[in-house]
Length: 463
Image (cartoon, rainbow, N blue to C red; front, side, top):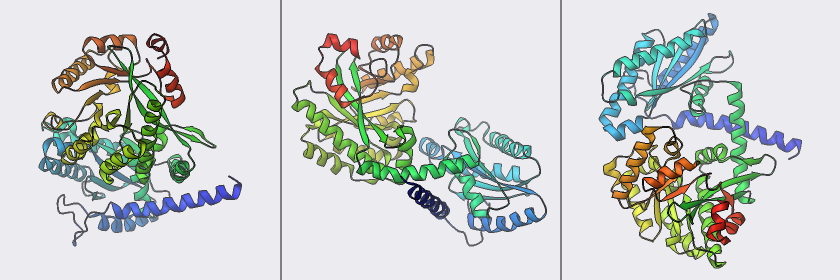
């Protein structure tokens, strides 16, 4: 791109950021009690909180006091409600509100700004006071939930934005919320210019994804699945790669979350499904040994689109027999709405398509729900497999998953297999299939074609 194009692109991205920041405030708004008080917690409503904070911000500035916006997010509120029921979930929200009241102690303004988010406008003189405030909140939270059934489940993320003398209260609030979105796994995140820069870069990348799809910059790589019993390739998993014209290879972890946020992930998913099925059919037409091809389904595709019709139409368009297609859903995604999961997967499976549950062991499945989901394959999460060499607990859990799967008459696949020792253990406990770098990294279609053409003896030396 030339200089003017880059400038125009950057300005467009900045305006987009501003637009989404304003939109963010309104989307997250749930209710506005007439008296400005949240009915469940007794804290200020969002609207009243922000109005009063605008006045307080100016007052602090005039009096030379420093100000920070601190936003607390209940970690895993949905998980707690799923495991223990909505009444317990509401109890957790009330407990968080009580912790906020204790640390605020009437000195600062506080609000329940969303279903499971709380905000505090914090006045201070030294940076250490912010750390102490968050620490006091954690202690209050631990005290409130001590001895309860949810004690081990309760945690939080905190986003902190310090007033720079320029921002209005809405910008300050949005910056603190941005910390929750871009926390990189940290429990407490403080807003920085680097974070703002990253946000602008993400906005540009989002826009470029649309062109990437139209201009054929995406490519599918395929990772073989190997039978422990025969050593043969029984299937491949389709994995997307982005070859950016100027940035080069863009890792999936850098663009898939952005694609999910914007909704373009559903278009990418459909492209991936169609491309994978077409490739699988091409291998068969070329006389290669038939292998099953598995395609990941995103949460957005599963819950926001008519995925049943999509799968049916793609199979008809490509001519692929349904028995050679496998749809992968994650454990967490499947448990979000168990009734829809059972219905949708059941109808896809009735076409003859196989269903696998990906990342099993990393989520929070209810075993009573799991037995009702129509499944064919259970994929043991790599976080368990990577510890098998030195962690006895991982061995016990993995063995239990294999036994569970066998009792349910499922095929068991281990993800992330990287060592000979892992292979030996997994073979010994009866695991059926392996997928991981010990056998093969994800490869372009042409390289998979070459592997499928090899005799079994030569293949074992290659994978």
